[in-house]
Image 1: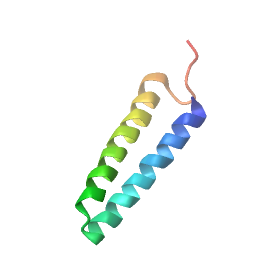
Image 2 (image 1 turned 180 degrees about the vertical axis):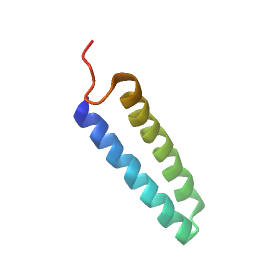
Image 3 (image 1 turned 90 degrees about the horizontal axis):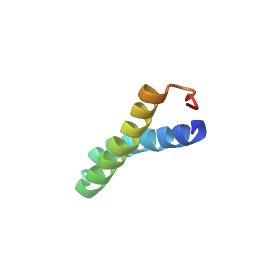
Image 4 (image 1 turned 120 degrees about the horizontal axis):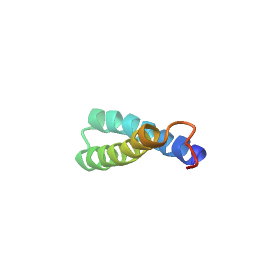
Length: 59
């Protein structure tokens, strides 16, 4: 689960960067998809760390 959280965290960071670039280019569809990816992956990472800790406990 540690590596999965790192990968999803990187995806969330890249989605945030993509959102900023999409705002600069004024691309509405790109803004929507990047924001959706940022919210979904970012929320998963944050909630996983909050409820299981980092590194996660096994039981």
